[in-house]
Image (cartoon, rainbow, N blue to C red; front, side, top):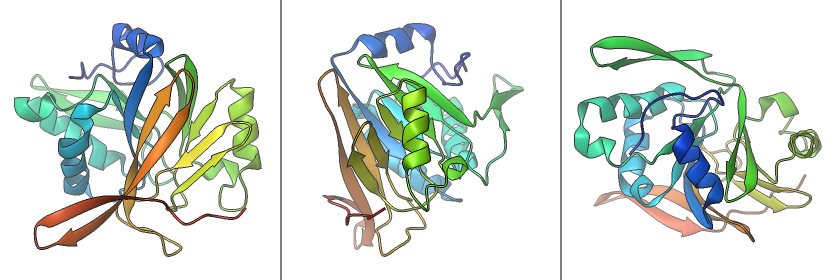
Amino acid sequence: MNTLQQIKSGLLSSEEDIKKLSQMESAKFLVISDSHGAPFLMQELIERFSKSCDGIIFCGDGIGDLFHCIQLSEENKSFAKKLPPVIAYVQGNNDTCSISLETGGESKRFTVPPELVFNACGKEIFVTHGHLYSVYYNLELLENETISRKARIVLYGHTHVPFEQQRNVYIMNPGSIRLPRSQSSAGFAILEVTKRWTSTIFYKIAYGANGMETTPYFPAPVFM
């Protein structure tokens, strides 16, 4: 369950929970990006996957969708229990720099940081939307910025194309849950971080007779 308090780093969490996360042997994160006006889809993904995760990471463009879910947690105790203790989010090129939440009968303003860094299992994770680093063309600027921040993992969005690469740092894009591009599937990712390694399971979203279906898959390689 999340405290819904924004700490100095920009995370929705408590300092105690952040410290616990940094000391864990392994941690899992639901990673979503580029929802672009799909609040109920994001809500369903959180209901299905976040309870088994230690955090949610949103890589931008759809901050209102995420805060729809956070607002729901204020009104629905059952849903609130599904929010993990750490929620990280950043501002996309289509997002505002702050957003309001009705809590305790009052309107509270939350900052939407352009970027942030936090620690999980002893590894620094850099989260950014990606538009500031020309990610449509190559990942050199993004990789160099990650190294300069002493991070070992970088998560980004913006391209709407799922991607994973291990070079000098671990780079991952979960794709878009609503508007996939370049013949990719709408989808998201579960990131697992341990003290020894980092890996991702990508999921594609489809709709069948029983509603939304999520299937693990390997995204097509992206050449840069």
